[in-house]
Image 1 (tube, one colour):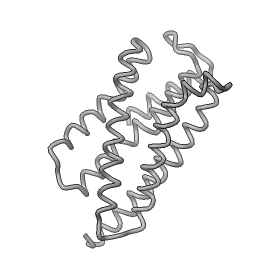
Image 2 (cartoon, one colour; image 1 turned 45 degrees about the vertical axis):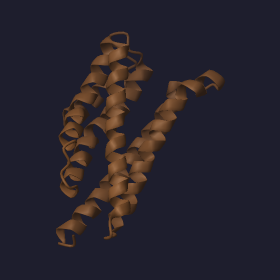
Image 3 (tube, one colour; image 1 turned 90 degrees about the horizontal axis):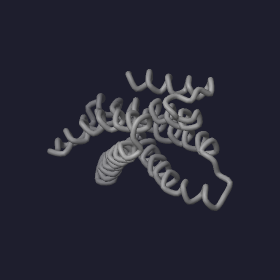
Length: 182
């Protein structure tokens, strides 16, 4: 829940166009999206994954990185660009591992349920976010794309793609599992 609070602070900085510790308000907008949608929701998703997976030795690392990654990103945004890059990299890799494992689990499952489709869409939305994030530096070099152009696209993919589809998928999956149909 602390990440909702942190996201709210970043959003307030953006709304009031406050430059905080040399962080531009446009970066605050992107940070608010990150903390509201990724950092706050991913722990729920990873916890749900832990309920359906055969426990793997690497699962505890997934949880630890999920907790540490957003903090490194936040500190990096304010204090150190290299720390921010490290935080973003490990956090993104963590969600890629989550999404990939989830997709493989769904693919290999003999039991189909309506939650699977939403979880697949959620994972694909995250992959789209990664691709856009990687190509943003190239796009801004050759086109007149600004960070403020990216915020609604990035935010929409996070909010409606990754989070909304993921929440619906996990709710349907939980209902399916609670019916005793494993």
